[in-house]
Structure formats: C-alpha cells, structure tokens
Amino acid sequence: MHHINIGIEENIRKKIVEVLRQLLADTFCLYFKTHSYHWNVTGPMFQTLHDMFMQQYTELWNVIDLIAERIRSLGEFAPHSYSNLTNITQLKEDTNVPKANDMIRNLIQDHEAIIQYIRNNFSIIEQGNDQATIDLLTERLDVHEKTSWMLRSLLE
Image 1 (tube, rainbow, N blue to C red):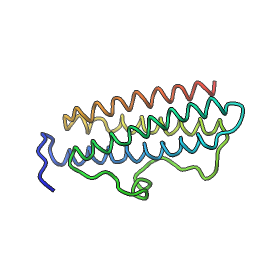
Image 2: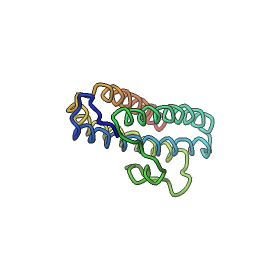
Image 3: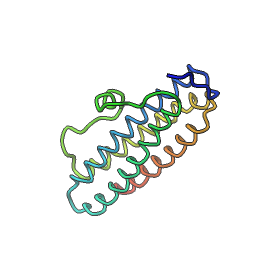
C-alpha cells in the first residue's frame, strides 16, 4: 500500500482506525438488531415501534458506509467479514425474540454503550487532530443520544 501522508502520525492514525472499526462493528450489530426488532415486534405498540425501528435502522444502515469510508480515507481496510464484525463488537446478540419493552431496553443499552465508547475514545481522535473523524463522531453522539432519549420516553 502506498505511504499515506495526511498529517496524522502513523501510530495515532492506526489507533483512530481501531476506534472506527469497533464503532463500525457496533453500528452494524445495532443496525441488525434494530432491523430484526422491526420484523419481530408484537403487542399494542406494534405500529409505533415498527415505524420507529425502521427510521432507526435506516439511519444506522446509511452511516455504516460513512464509517467504513472514513477508515478507507485513513488508509486502512474496513472490517471485511461478518465474523470480523462480531469479534470486534461490544454489543450482545439476543438469544431469542424479546418482548416489546425488552426490545426498547436492549436498544437503549446498546445506544448508551456506543455513546460511552465514543466519549471514552474521543481523546485519541483529538490527539490526531483529525477533524473529519471528530465531525463524524460528534454527529454519532448526537444521533445516539437523541435515539436513547426517544426510546426512554416510550418506557415512562
């Protein structure tokens, strides 16, 4: 691969890529979980949740590409297999189909885990003075925090 010279030290650039790879894996797994909840939700909140989950998984699906392209822009390969993604993610898969309220709780937990992961790793991105990744992660924080709030509101 041609040497990359974009003003970020190589060791920092590689750390940033590792942060982005996990974010991509977490986002992909959350995308799939949200999509499966869209398919499988039942109960009196069916229509509300079915529609809400569709909005959420669509947003997650679209951002997976942006995260992967950011990794490529930093000169590295994005995760290339499903097993690669599942080995990297911190999120837990469901062993069965949860009830509607448990779906909501699981999604809140996953969104909050991603929020905490981004916050805990933000300093690495700042260390590289990587404004493009800072912008991406700032937007992800906003989306995940807003989604968590909307999901929490359903349980009150």
